[in-house]
Image (cartoon, rainbow, N blue to C red; front, side):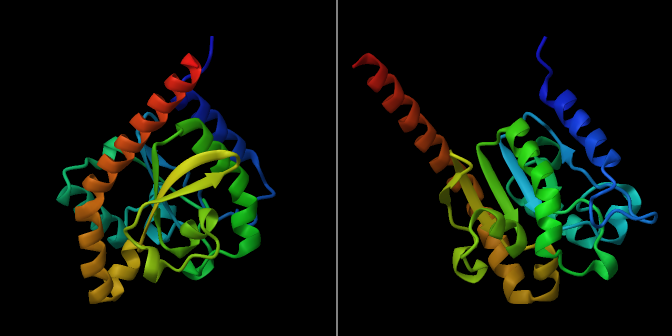
Length: 208
């Protein structure tokens, strides 16, 4: 019998916990894997755990997490109905930015996570998670917009957003992020329309 998504994610988490080669894994760091509904259509990817995330073993539970909760509430999306993770899953020292080699080491697990969840859209939070899918993009010009990217041979819809922590540091970024989130339902509607077109086109090709 094939395993469901939750079982597959649990197995992946066990593999990560057993992997002593992960560069940020130390005696004082906990694995912060991911949280939410594995059956979701929306996957949020942030950067890395901070102090509270490391303590509670859950992403986005500090001040940035509280702001993310507010943003989701503003568009009537329950936090429990999406899935949230990061590009690195152990806390970088002193909350510094993740290094390229660290993102690469955790990347194989994140790739597997994406494959299991198979979301309709990925919302990246911050430039490091955006860079995974759009390495040459600038967040100042791409935030809040919908992009279709080819990721490992498959089409993915990606919406880059500012990291909630950046919004807490900058009032103008916060204003833009609030506006971007308010447009998110409209963007999700566009994705649903695109999906319908793809299915219709496939069905028409099969009839030929």
